[in-house]
Every structure is written in C-alpha cells, then in structure tokens.
Length: 442
Image (cartoon, rainbow, N blue to C red):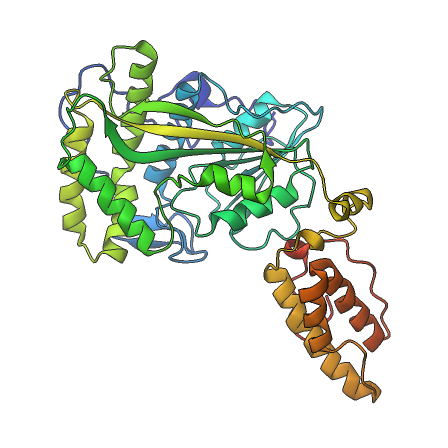
C-alpha cells in the first residue's frame, strides 16, 4: 500500500504509455518508422525552487553544474521509458543478483525518479528500500518501506551504514561518476560481507554494426564521438569503462557474472525479442537525445543551442531508419564481496564493526579527522600547559607505518588525553565520520 492508503501498483506496469508522474507517453514505436520525433518543447518555470533553466531545460541546483543532464518532466519521462526498456531487454527481470534474505535492505544509488526502487518494494514486500540522488524528483506517494534522500553519492556515505546492505543497485550512472574505483570501494564497504551483492547496469552508447549499413562517417557515429568526448572533458565520462570488471576485482568483488545484451537502435531485427528491445530503446533515446547532448556540448565544447538542435535532428533520422542495422550494448555486472581472508579483516568483522579503518583507504573522513585532531591538540596543549605525546608528526608516522586503523586509534587516544571527555572506541569507518567544523568535538 502507498502512504496514502491506496494500492501502489504503477501505471508503468499495466500500461507502458503512462509514467508514475501521471504523464502520458507516446505509444512505443511500431515496426514502420516515418519521420522524426518532434523536439521537446522548452519549459518556462522550474519545478523545484533551487533549480535553474539553461537552454530551455531545467537542471537541478544542488551541486550546481556537476550533473550534466536535466531533471525536468521530459527527462523524468525518459528515465521511466528506459526503466521499461531495461525490463524488456532483461526479460522482465528487475535484477539478476540474488536476494534471499527475508527482510532485505536494498540501496538504489542514483535512483532518479525512483521507479526501480518502487518496483522492488512491490516485489519484496518485507524489504527496506532506500534511494539516493542529487535531486528529489520522486513521486509523492510511495510505499511505506521506501525512503529517498538527496545526496551526492560521490561524497562520503555518512550514515548509510557499513556492512549493512543486502543489495546495492546502480544503473545508468555513466556521465555522473568521476571516480569509479572510489565509488566501488564505498559500495564494497557498505555491503554485507560475503552475502551482499552489487548490481551494476550500464549502456555502452558506442554504435556497432555487423553488415556495413552504418557508415563510419554517419551522424550517429559522429554524435556518439562528440558527446562521449565532451563528457570526458568534465571528467564525467558517458562512455562505458571497459576496465569495469578489473576495477571491481581490485576492490575485492568476486563472482562477477558479467552479461552483455544486444540493443538495436530501432526495431530493425527480425527476431521478435530484439525487435521489441529496439522499439523501447528507440523511444527512450529519441526522447532523451537532446538531454544527453545539450549540456556536454554547450558547456564543454562551446556549441550553440542551434548547433545542438541540428545534430540532434540529423542523428534522430539515422536512429529511426530501419535501413541502418546499428546496435549498442547493455552490460550487467552482479558481484559480491569476497570472503574475509586477512586476519585483520576477520578481526574487524568479529568485533561487530568496531572499525572499518584498516581498509587502508584514506578518504575525506580521514582528512577531516587529521585537521580536527591537529586543531584540538594545539588548543588543549596550550590550555593544559603540557605537551601531549600524540603530535601531528606522530600521527602521520602511525598512519604511514601501521595503516589507517592505527592512525585512527592514535588520533582518538590523543583527543582523550588532551580533554576531559573520554572518547568511545571508533565504531565507524572513514566514510561515516561526522563532518564537524574544525576545532569542535563531533
């Protein structure tokens, strides 16, 4: 049941033409394509007060400029269309990673409209589901077990709970991530050891063709090259990272069950399933082509809106031509954390999360604690008229020689020695440290 007491079945499950926002989508494209979908009409009023208008599209104001794509109604419809597209491409599956716990905890990173998280609540009625995103564009009425939070998932994951999630889901985050190894490390630390699973799903936008019907100089090929290069300039690459599997393995993920799914740009195949995939992908891509192109090209390549409009129109013509047998690929990557091997890791687990610091990853939390500790040492040494045995130099040496855990233990011991307040043992990892102003106790 939804929070208003009404059933939370969603219109996208019963009718693919309506989004959960109450907006009618155009019907899915048919086997015959004629013409080009019209350009989206510009909006005039921001949906959320902090948002702003740029080139006729609405962008979120939180962490302004970081995210390259709009957050208006047109973009929300595109996200919901893509949700249906992924469902069709994956045979109706919401995920492939196992969810076997009676009351699973599920985290959706970059939740967007929240449509995947809502469907997971429908599928797992005893689950606790949480979605995070830079902007709050989710529906007003949602299942009681579902919560959404506005946050930047590239910032420290304070308060999300280490070792506590059964499934962490990430889908279509290309173009929104500047540091994939760091994000994978966060996911690793927050999944339940051994039994938790990551489910990562991305589209590789590079057009492919096996029969020569896509010319190397085509507008579709040019569009992909222009946009992928432009997002790389901002260090938010939209291109699929071919080192993804290797990055996951380096962080510590195992059982990586990589699957690649062929995605036609239009319903040109004769195979019924591929044809259906092509219908839905074509609808989502033509709906969102302007959104994918506008900010990357105008911000990073100094294109005008008119330049983008011409590229989008020409590219849509090729996308919608069944004479061009182009396709791209979806890659799904379920993976779970490997079993503890090193004694230090095993000891940490057995201490009920006494510390996550011996991961050896010096995150923003460690840097904050270093500055905080130094300030407290200097202040309390002067007030107490004594020199503490834990100087910043000592702490630095401890960090270098003994690892992050020894550093944190020393830092907290220093604070205890310099103040009347006795600090409890550290019960959080670097990403969960409080973000206190320098010079004040957390």
